[in-house]
Image 1 (tube, rainbow, N blue to C red):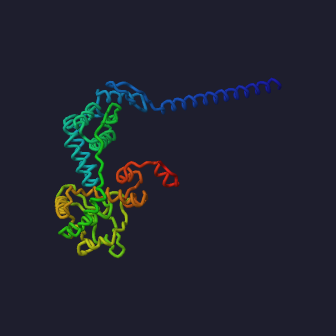
Image 2 (cartoon, helix red, strand yellow; image 1 turned 45 degrees about the vertical axis):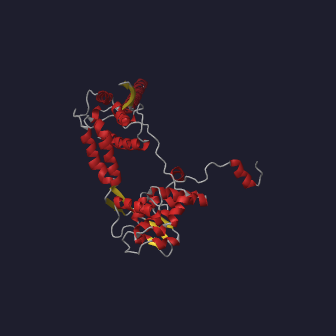
Image 3 (cartoon, rainbow, N blue to C red; image 1 turned 90 degrees about the vertical axis):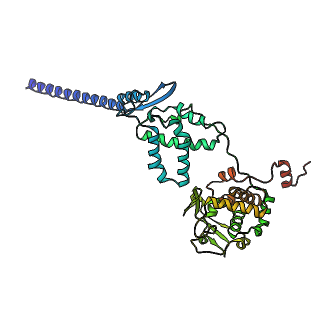
Length: 386
């Protein structure tokens, strides 16, 4: 009997030890599997030298990494091996993705960059073959006299095209983003305000302006810091004569000189604003028309050519003696609002800017020149300054 019990206990012990061993093996196998999966999930990211440049390549597997290296080196260019003419691809970007979705003025600017600067260098090349050296040639060809702003416009167009190519898996990196690229141009010419004396001269000669439309254009431009396109976009519905308020809601742009485009919106959301104007200005406005008619132009907005005619006639009628530039009025009025009120927020709101930094950078030019800080403090605190 004792032997039977001992035998049974031994068998049970063997069974338990076997089960424990199997359980340990299962746990080890599961851990190894998880570690393997973790390793497989880890992305590959390696730096290689290609044509003298450092390039980082990221992949999920070794095979994907090899394929990317081959494509980047030019051994293969896409999954099909087909190459794409840059001009055709860029034109597709412009016709399908850009032109229908941006302002006409912006589309015209983009097209000009393609035609004048980008196509002459890259037009005949394959998209997949373009290097940072080819891109640099575009900016070099623009010359040292080109403004930084002009080169940045070219950069904007190129960047959008290359980003689309990346999304289409036609290229592995944007050649425009190479650390070797140098884009240097002249600083933009700042818009100088008219002097106070010049503005007073124009204001005092308003009655000498013969045509009512010319007179209205000058009166509005002298009294409000509006963009030229905002002046032309004013309709009678926007003019509240009782409260002497102008509601800035619309614009008229000129993608081409003689084809004005009316837009029922402003340049930015912050450009929508209400501005007070001196009651005296009412005397210089033409007879009030229908709500949908334009203050400057009547039933239809005026073209760029007609605006140029207004400027020339105003110059002659007022004997101003200097070229009249619409954008200088906006800068001048903003500068003098600042000089008279010292209220940056007010100037910002009047201009329709989103940030005070933009106002300070581009429009608040100041009138006093260099200021002796010691004199300013002395005056403020009642101190004697020699």
